[in-house]
Image 1 (cartoon, rainbow, N blue to C red):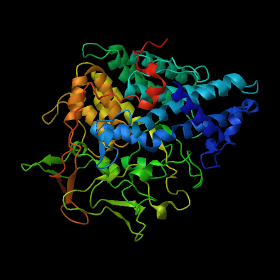
Image 2 (cartoon, rainbow, N blue to C red):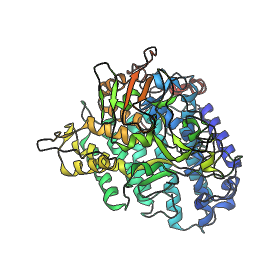
Image 3 (cartoon, rainbow, N blue to C red):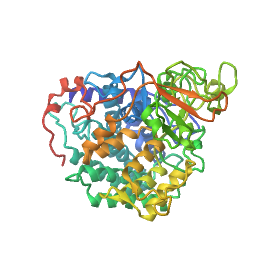
Image 4 (cartoon, helix red, strand yellow):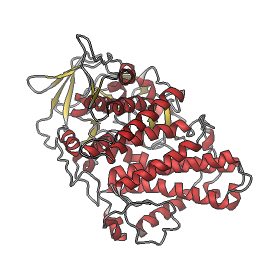
Length: 561
């Protein structure tokens, strides 16, 4: 673990030497982070509260920068990059892959910084720190550490659990811990966080009890597969997932926003639907780590952003086929239109209109251009919030102010629906159907019906998963839904991935402007359309540089206490 710990130490030094300017999000206003290790800094409630602020932004920066969509969407198949980041797109990620190493370091950085805060609290916190603040701040750190380990175990399988980096600083004998024992650890941590977090946020954007109980619903749904057997999920954990999801739905006071597109029209931060967001602020062009860099990688052109490097990124053919209203024609093309508002809010079709984005070139409101002859892209819209014209003064290149969702209320409705069907693979439970339809009808679609002449029959797992893919596309979720499936039905997970088309295609509107429908044609000369997912490449490989410094990571994992 020497290399990992050198990374931890380096990142700690960088973060502790950094400083953050004041901003509109009050709880991110804090003194230089170098004060956090000062014994005099943990003497009052205000000092401790300030110390936890970096857990909401800076420690997650490397995850948010590119790992979020590279793993969650490129690997999950909702989006692709035609010429870059191909390791995750094509499922041939190696131990030397740069994005693989960056993602590993990103999550272990969250673990290390959470551990550092807990260490400092135990060592320095004085009698002037009230018990409610002490409990809340420790719960915040445990929450972040548990969430980071959720990402680690789902991407790399067995990983080493580290609760104190100082104890392990010179320990090269650390081994990985088994997947079930990692899940036990993170569930235990999240339950502790839920017990100590307040029901109402002490400051806008802070974690609450409902942030933790929502995460417990997510954890238990996944854990039901981890500890299932014979292709069946553990019913006890399905029941727990349903229990926590319903508590958040009925007791948190959170509500779905009426219009899906408003979730991503800036400023949307910390809205009524949000359960947890990474908190980003614009602090000027010379500050790195407290601002959102991700929109730069997603925007298709500098005409709608400050840099706009996402010209080869967009929806996959498979993702497009999930939306109602597009049908396959005899010649293999897809044709039609959809009433699903999520497509317009997530990906840009030629001719689509976005009045919230002003082009730099002519100061006109954005109408997505129709370009190309046999290949173009349904470019990314989600998290792309505007050009320098729209954001002058509050953004610059790679420095954006918009938050990143980590959990929304909509997920609770879909978790309940999936947990309610249990191991039968379908459900007609009225509450599950009602919750499912709250998400579906918000998107502008007709409700799903079970009975009657036009009913579709019981709600199936495939339908719920498709709804999740559409609801959370470009929010870094799809891959983890597939990993959850893989825990109890690996062959079904492989089949889902191997049937996805991740290749180029051409989107032709029937007219410009104001298209009424589109025709999508696969690009004939583009051959890298499919992946071959199997037991040998499903998990990400531990980065080679880590294995070279910590050979015990190659040993068989052991249970964590």
